[in-house]
Image (cartoon, rainbow, N blue to C red):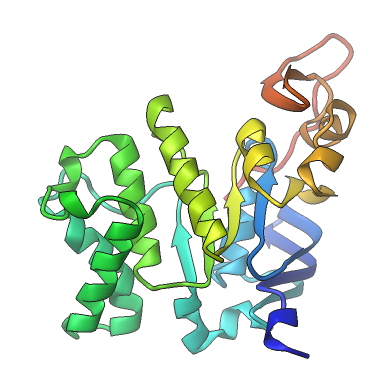
Length: 273
């Protein structure tokens, strides 16, 4: 089997539970190299848990998770091939740290504890800032940036590892509408450059325009396929539950509105972790 034939990410019949609460149930998913896959679903559907399971931060109670053909919790040196942008970035924007230093933090997993960054590490951080168009703000304090600028910096931090796979959890959280377009343009460009991307998002419209494949998750994978094949009203109702209204924007749904119609509400789902 050639290198290109090995999936970037592969989950087989994965179940994740927190105590008695099942967060993911019998999930199977395959992400091919260079593919852009979107994960959509309601709040609490398990999107964050799915990404953390791929990262090896959460261990499933059943099933197998492989990253570049290796078990997710034993990838070892391959960890540097995976960049991660969490929904809540662990950086205190009030702390007097500069943009360049935040991006350089992305190299720390490779540098190791108590070791100083090398010239190669600093060069990688500079290249990452250039890729997201933020090199001119390298000396700016992180708290002085707009929400959209900060999110680009956090993407740059993930890119500082020079990964082959990029995982993003709701990357537009806290980003003003005017800056979201440029953020998504950046992700599209990274994909065109050959990056494999797996993005969790509640924004069905954005996902439908960006990705090669979309998976609708509500504890289980309800649907998986090309956006134009699976993002229809009837199919999405199976993911979001009864009472979801999809407002059309062209051929694909634009907005998901939860309602509570007489005669029932969507089934309760376990809280997402």
